[in-house]
Image (tube, rainbow, N blue to C red):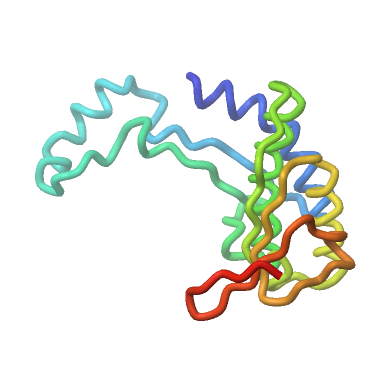
Length: 166
């Protein structure tokens, strides 16, 4: 129930951000982790023998997951690596927008090499959305591109495990 409530609260942000970043009809669904036509107790009971044999629990809330699809097909089968990256970013950004708008929080966002696998236009849309969050931003990148990120407050250089302030 709690996951369904959070999913329902995040979904409008997903629709807005995914459309802006990807321009693709990507649907986001919540899979519950067991067949909802039966109770959780019945699903666990039905899987007991198999679970004991495997030494793991194969049904239950811990198996819940989000699925991304395009026209009914799994997104990972249809999207390029850059589009997959933007979809993953859209998931993170919808969570950050939710936290900001609904709870007044200003989280920190860590971006690991944001320009990898993205063309200039998609990267610009992504960075525009990130800067609009008005949150603390930590960027790890191979190349410093100040045109996209503006002037950083602090820059560090990492070389062979040593960190230097630039």
